[in-house]
Image (tube, rainbow, N blue to C red; front, top):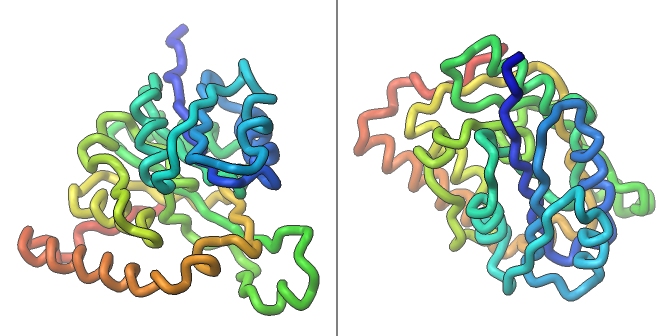
Length: 240
């Protein structure tokens, strides 16, 4: 019987002790095996290290001086042994069959490079109604063009390259745009795979002063596409 491929799951965390355990538990509860779970502590000063170490030996814990989410993911990638990569932010959770659904899509479509799924946002339970009313939370799941909703073949990831580390916000969007420019073969599943937590410390709130970086990222992608002759509509993500 052919053995299943190893999936490396990388969880970067910075001062995320409040939600980290729930994120790790959602990975360990996955119906797919084998997996390895790598938690990269990006210089946390709270109890994140203790939370992560509490899951050893089921997770691998490593520490780096604060360098941002991209740098933390990149360190996890350097440590990863799997032939597939998956990512989860420390304040979010996966549905239990995320990896099973995505690996099934790869089995059915051997030439595909990346499989995404849908994401549903939710207000973190500790928020009171006054805060919830200020943070928009769409009711319906949406296509998740995000690393946390993605499963990607190892070789396909390196065709795109590591995560950029100079953006304060929007680095996830930037990586996906680079992947489209590399013409990776992508599938978007109709299934819900990922739950994104809305809380007081989301980057969109704490780093609002950098929000224009998203516009810069989109403009840079358009400029690259013009130079490469890719503005022809052939970079869409197909539905599965």
